[in-house]
Structure formats: C-alpha cells, structure tokens
Amino acid sequence: MTTHAVSASEHFAAKLRYEIDPADLATLRGGGARPLVIDVRSLASWKQGRIAGAVHIPGDELELRAAVEVPRDADVIVYCWGPGCNGSTKAALVLSQLGYSVRELIGGFEYWAREGLQIENESGRSRLPIDGLTAPLVG
Image 1 (cartoon, helix red, strand yellow):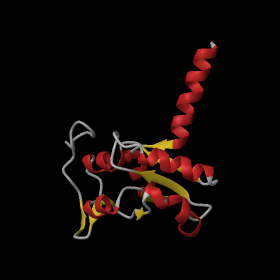
Image 2: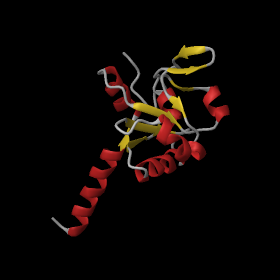
Image 3: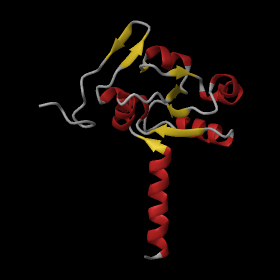
C-alpha cells in the first residue's frame, strides 16, 4: 500500500467516525439510541423548522452553554442548515476541543427534511414529501 493510499484510507475512516448522515441518524434513533442532537442555527431558523427532538444551542453560544446543557457522556450530533453551511463543523470543533464526543450531521436540516424524516416547529411535527434526488422513493 502506498503512503497516499494509507492517507486516503485514514481520511475516510476519520470521516465515518466523525460524520453521520440523515438515514444513519434515523436508523440509530429508530433502534432506541438517544443521541443528543443539537441544532446550532439561529433562533429564526430553529422556529422555522428543526429535527424532531433536537435541542437548540446556537453556535455562538455553544462554548458558554455546553458545560451546563450538554452531559459529558452524551453522544452528541450537531447540525446546521445544509451542505452550504459550516456552522455544524465549527460547533463540532468547539465541542471536541471541550472534550465531548461529537459527530456532524452531513446534509444538515435540509437533507434531513428532504429525505422525508420527521421535523417539527411550533405548529407540531410533520414530514415533507421525499425528494427523489436525496432518498429512494417508496415503491
């Protein structure tokens, strides 16, 4: 194996350790696991819609609030809007520097919603129609 191949292998193994996609998070939760899912977006974004069961700690407040609101032994998953947002990457960095076990939800809220997974807002819980470009359509 070449040095380049080893580096690539290590890179992808690390990605899988520190990232999770919407389908894998849904499967994890469906199996009874209860990771602490943190929405790091703004309050306006949170009110617009969020992953059902998530907690809201805006990214710029995370360092101050984590010690009180995030248990040290929690399996933490952070998310922001979607692939064009690096707020969850920044949040994961902060939490990892504070000693937490943390993963980033790739695709963020956008892909969670587009895959037809449960979302909520002040009006209650719902699911958007599945986007055939992000998840297989049933049938």
